[in-house]
Length: 235
Image (cartoon, rainbow, N blue to C red):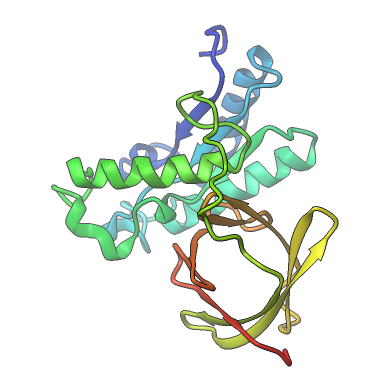
């Protein structure tokens, strides 16, 4: 792979390693980072998109074997994200992460024909979501030109929004114009401000990898269950 010419590299990492207990946490971290560094040697400017495992219920919260060194899928996703953040902090600006649960999550097990592998409907859904996620990285997965913006597609507007987030209750945020961009600022102190990017009807929070929403009629429905509803001031 290092020596093959390409426009973008996508890696789905971890499910076979975790289900077979092939590596401990420490070995996995060093092996993964070394593999990405090898790819980067041959592709210094090519985007590398790392996708963590899709939902697999039996091993989400436990390792397949005993021993604290082995990982559940939840642990593995956390290790992947930590490694990617470390490499990005080290200067790799073309390395991206997509949480596999945003492509196919716990409520969509029916699309796994054997409870592990997606069937035709699952693959189609994953492809649609992957395309939407990769679009925010600056190029589409099939290397086709990005579609021209449509005047009929509603644009997310500055103003107040009521936020409903599963397990977190209700809060408010304000979307502000910041130069040519939009910035979402929550009333909650534990939610840092987030740059907002809109591509067609899809909305992305630039500091929340793998999370995207669909915007229509003053309402954004995100793939993690969060909903923003536009409200009129004061806010």
